Length: 202
Figure (tube, one colour):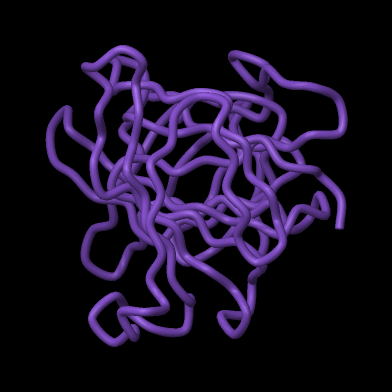
């Protein structure tokens, strides 16, 4: 799995991964027509020693959270026929991550999931937001998490856990403590997301 840098971008072909901000970014697909172009991304913090990965749908020119900050999706070239799509991401962050030294920021992005204690699904947990309450003050979210090796439909109901989270709330998932540092609604620059801080090393 390799990427190349071209025209100031980390250029990642669909089905491959590249390193952005010290983390691994995989492109599942790149599609779209006209001015609306989207890519399915998976961001993995494993190279930095953080046992977490998260998925998201990114649009061209939006900011995506990766490792050391928010990086811009510079371009998305949708796949055509046998030609795979590709995504170009800024190698340097447009905004640096807030947070205390020694803590890593991981995210649940709208319509995506956060996997803890992977990459193997056995022993890992997938966390998703089931309700966004970003119009309220203070903002909050409802989340559920379950064993990664099963879908929601195939999971035993007693293995699915739920929590109501606000900024400052903590969640213990498989011995890993995640503390909510921000709950942000969708903006012109990025989708809605929950940012967690966790100890960065294994």
